[in-house]
Image 1 (cartoon, helix red, strand yellow):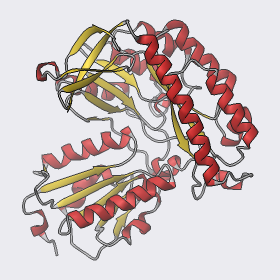
Image 2 (cartoon, one colour; image 1 turned 90 degrees about the vertical axis):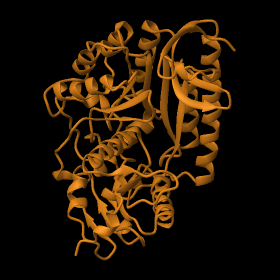
Image 3 (cartoon, one colour; image 1 turned 120 degrees about the vertical axis):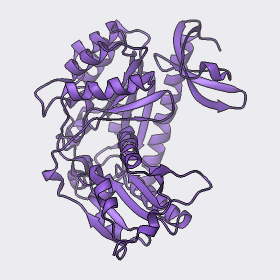
Image 4 (cartoon, helix red, strand yellow; image 1 turned 90 degrees about the horizontal axis):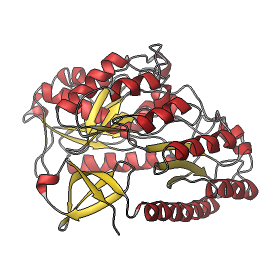
Length: 425
């Protein structure tokens, strides 16, 4: 029978792990639950329902997911605990066996979470509902706010690439999106609600349009036409999908920031082939050069993975030399971890874990040097800063259009406003 007492106060607690896409989806779930009377519980309140949105990009992500579940079960022992996200899609039975978990929802089911909560029965722990990922075709654009300033607009989900090291296609399904018209409406609502910065997110963002016969280029053109004091950032885009017309458009657009995040994964062509990536180092270098040609002050972040199977010391050194040659701003360095069901498990040789960590540290040092050089190059230049609603001591911070972090004395009247200034040390 339905145990309505667990929803007596309709208080809900959220925990989100992983990518910006997860945060956008959690925000959308929060709005759905608000419509049926739920309120986010405060720090000193008891939650009736706990929702944990998980990640599964690495074994470490799975471990963090389990730790978070145990932590929330301990913190809210009387709450109805729901686990969703990529980890839930890939390993629902494993999660259902964790003591205290009541419901596990896959990628398809989490979008109708309210249906489950409206018809809840407090059964034995471990009930789970997961549709085979191949059957998932639904998508709706969503926008979240991490504070009053930055919003994340989910424009795409899923991936058709099936890189040998990655489980995301199995967790997120095929590439899909809503129409430009529907996506624009969500952006318009965010701008009307006060969004000053909107980050376009997706699993394979540049693949937008696959399910509607449109293109990512057409999407950013439409977004740029919207009125309002707002700027956009492209969170991540595959180098083979980053066309010259996209780069040139960002350079001349009204609202798009000169900021790119581009996954490289390896600076070795041999490893890129083993990974089943859809570009080589020559194409990657060409894209970076094009950005710097039309936007000399653009910030360029790059994802790179170390310790993948097949990465000999010679290939790692080749990767390091290639990265050092690029005029990029920062690296996001990931240590490879084996994922069940991936083709990479058949690749040799295997890099020992301590060596993976050593290589990570080496590239972190390269990243630190790149970031310092980029920041130094911006000193004395004028920029437009969007001040954020965060206070550290007597200071507040914000980011320029090309992602330089600056600080000033805290002034609540500056929160969520743009200010033109000269960057100083």
